[in-house]
Amino acid sequence: MSRLRVFLRNPPASLSETPSFLLNTHGQLKLSIIQEQEVLVVSVLEARGIVEDCQRSCDSYVKIGMFPDSDPSDRQKSRMVPECRNPIFLQTFYFVVSEGDLHKRLLFTMWNSDSTSRMSALLGCMSFGVRSLMDPGKEFQGWYFLLGEELGRKKHLKVPTQHNNPTGNSKSSSV
Image 1 (cartoon, helix red, strand yellow):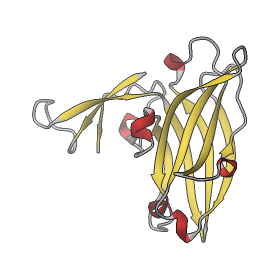
Image 2 (cartoon, rainbow, N blue to C red; image 1 turned 120 degrees about the vertical axis):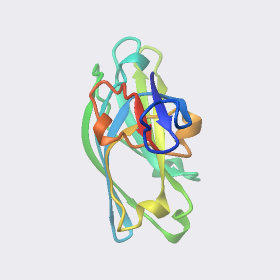
Image 3 (cartoon, rainbow, N blue to C red; image 1 turned 45 degrees about the horizontal axis):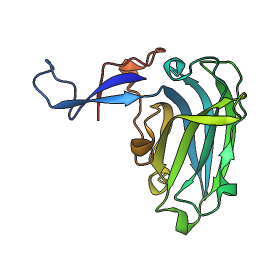
Image 4 (cartoon, helix red, strand yellow; image 1 turned 180 degrees about the vertical axis):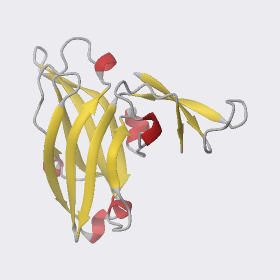
């Protein structure tokens, strides 16, 4: 787990000038979400910085679905990438969005599959408001932090370009 200092305004000249807080992150996920009429085209590209959350080998996969949803069968799942701490997924998923979905969130959860116990452990998550994703004027591409379950179900946090590094140990960010 990495710690990220988040500033409530743009990064100040000195740390004492602007209020900030520390946020625990669980790695990063690279995504591309494009709106094409009533369809969201979601590409899960790769992940990084999940080393500390996987004790042994990391057999990870990503689940995507509308939240809250009433039908778990509507969720989609990437293939599992075995024994890799920086998995490359390169998979695209399609979500047809109806008027009733606009109040929901598109939830991304990343999991580590344990073949011995046949259980999966949540590594982190993030979510995006569907109404916002359907705005053709907005762009959702790049690296995003994997957050804890409670925060990740409500928010997403983009990795700032100037702090976009392979280790995921960003020290500051503006919100």
